Image (cartoon, rainbow, N blue to C red; front, side, top):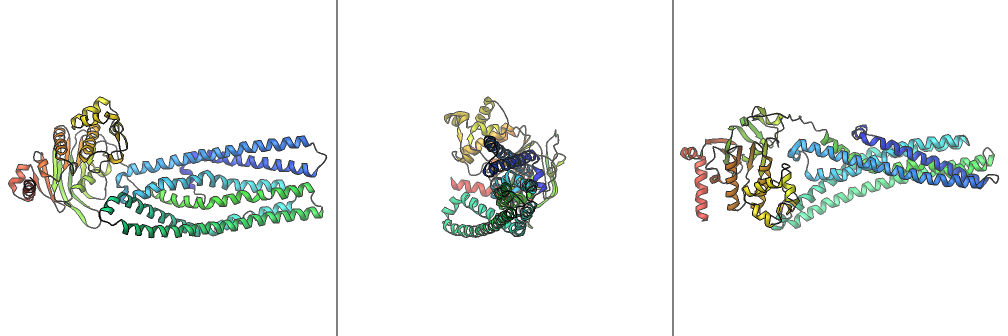
Length: 560
């Protein structure tokens, strides 16, 4: 149960653990002194009672102080553990990027960062200090009692290891059970989060009842395995109590036998009777932390699976001339290939990617942003392969999934760059939303989670304003104007065309009319780039692009 890798992953907590053990040991010494003084008061009549009362009082005060200090050390170590592990997890996920969802669900990450780390807090704050203290305490008491009755001391010391032996017997079974428990716990969390996020959809299709029953089944499975864990814990605690009480009783019997035979005095016999339980209390307390620590260990296995995930370190490079190119680029989400050896090149200006749904447009955006690295062929930013470098300083993605955080508008804009309020107002005016913002309280207007208090067009304009503040050389617009009003769509495209005079803008759009003035358009079909050129050139080719454009134009005319 002493996981060195886990223990040394948070080295900062080790000094506090040592101090915790030291304070507990001082408390034990105080308890021995106060117990000895009490026994002298009871058994001896020729002692200075005022001195003994003073010793007992001082020992009680000192013990109170060191117990409080031990609790403080527990808090300090647990605080460091939570901060360190959560920081390491967040840092690792930041390096992996949003591709972490390829291996772990968001619900699992949330549960690991919250409940899992809380379990590990108990491991560091309680279990580890108690483990070392439970080794020191019996040895200390053995030395003290050995001067009075070596047989009683030896019997008490021999019985102490029976508690950890009972723990070891259940450890193998407990580890398997707790791994299943944690797996069922995360599975239930996954279902709950997914159903909660999709509740509106479930209501629309009247499927909420069916999914409710499904969650009931998963909840019942979790209840059953929780009951098995509790049964195991209660049974092991019962065994530990039997050993503790039995060992104490055996030590008391030996002490009384020694007193009866006259080998020890009444003071010594009474002292052994009163202190014998202290042999087992530390180890018994360790046993009570054991199952919580085991749960923490199960969480740590999952935590280290993330922290130790092999990941090639991204290089930070300096780029002066910006271009994106793909050569013989192949990619598939599973065994089925989505992109079939495509080629394209994009330099300064507006570059459009069009095609029917499922043709591979958004897949290109995901690859450019490093969400997937298991492609073959070449995908380069200037002369560097995108999978090898940190692309975030150079690229900004704006999509329908771009997120607005709860807080003020100013907080959301400062996420891109620390700039003045004048600069923020300038970009808000540029995207045509400054008047609305001023009506809502200016830069201090409240934004709800995900921008729920905004319309689709308003949300996308604010997302674009934040992207403009970043001022990156390359912008990728992945269906950024889908499902918004015509006025907002036209304004956003106007801003993008103005931006493309200085930057490289890759625009993936469902509406081909938005890209009429693009410098280059790539038309995709079934994972292949079948045509490329300007709008006029593609229309003259009278191919796939021409058919798509005319079909959309006819639909828009029909809608009017």
